[in-house]
Length: 330
Image (cartoon, rainbow, N blue to C red; front, side, top):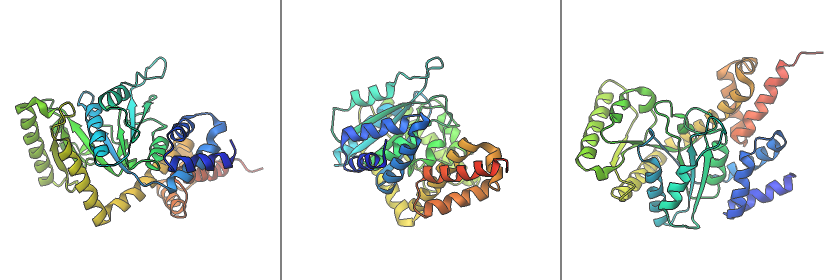
């Protein structure tokens, strides 16, 4: 796959050509070593055009993430925005594939619309709620849509990886499940910008869960666990109740982050974190030590990204340097 073809593909993705978006997503999901150079070049080009607001939707299984994601996508489309969805499903331990039920629900619950593009991914055994191909898929859709929704697989308290891939994180909790109390555990409390009590159509149960959650957030603030302003919403993806309010809360949070300068900082820190994760995955702890340790590696990554490189490009360039240092001299 030559560079001219990849450049043309990237240009068509940015122009929002749907067949080209699908082709680009297929390319970034391809694990063959022969495709790595093309993937690297494609992501370098689309990263330059990244313009979408990226929103992570996470929470435990059964909380109603897919239904809420579908309703939220319709709400953004109704506001004149195009929406890309990356939905990660659990993988089969035998085949490695997935039922892709998230895509079935999102497409079923939203009428076909040229402004909606849904990509389903199998988790593939990766922890943290995403899959190995997710960052590349998010990058492609972020260059070709106004909003990208990233729905994680739903694995519980360890599902915090999404925070480095998005601008803003929405955590969905289920009424009467005790989920609100989990926010007193710092690993999950630190990531949300908006917390949604899903399935608000359950009535009194949802209202009690909302009160419990607000109390939990207040207690956390009193003991010094502060995540800034965390909006609390109550919504039902099934009935649509509260979805516009949730979209408004997300919009208000984006405005506040942008005005304070925190949005740009988050994006820069997310790019470095994503590149660092890719670097460690490629070279491991020994390769990291060869670069002088974590702080030195992160500094090199930040410099490479500031010079105009994409996170993947920075990670692979520095990985090559690490591998060269580990080769025995002749």
